[in-house]
Length: 181
Figure 1: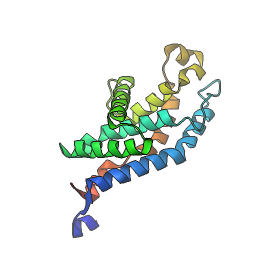
Figure 2: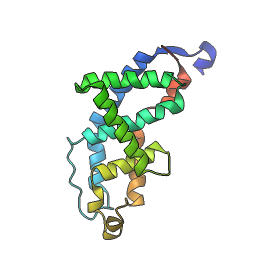
Figure 3: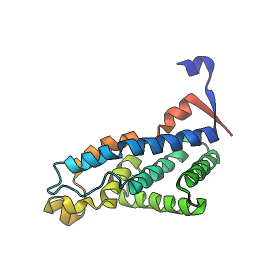
Figure 4: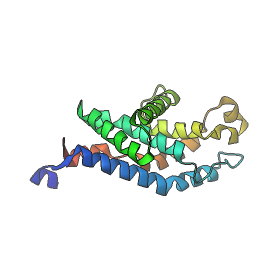
């Protein structure tokens, strides 16, 4: 409502990249143990999955890669590339890794997300399936799903609900802010 009256608040791309990086890192750090709890307590597993609360590096890469895939859907051409590069630059500093290496790893994860969720383009579902396969959760399921190497749909639905917390709200950001270089 206020944006209609006063206009959108200006937000620099660099500041947006900072907000994105900080919110993704904070959310992942604070909530990964909740995801582990959901996985371990899921009745679809006949054996409790062996997943550690501190094993969040694969999870973090899944979350970052999925969120970066969302950017072109919400930002204009060229602006999306600038914001993605700013984000990767900031993450490179946080993780003390070269830009090219991190960019390559994130592209591999994005490709992985596309493969495990083909033919769907829904990043939320891709995130859940990627978590399932990256943490080898198929081995803990009942024989039917274990033999198919496919996640139980009931488990995926539960995980999808939790994974919503890890998607950055690009639509709201774009709606409330005018992005400037």
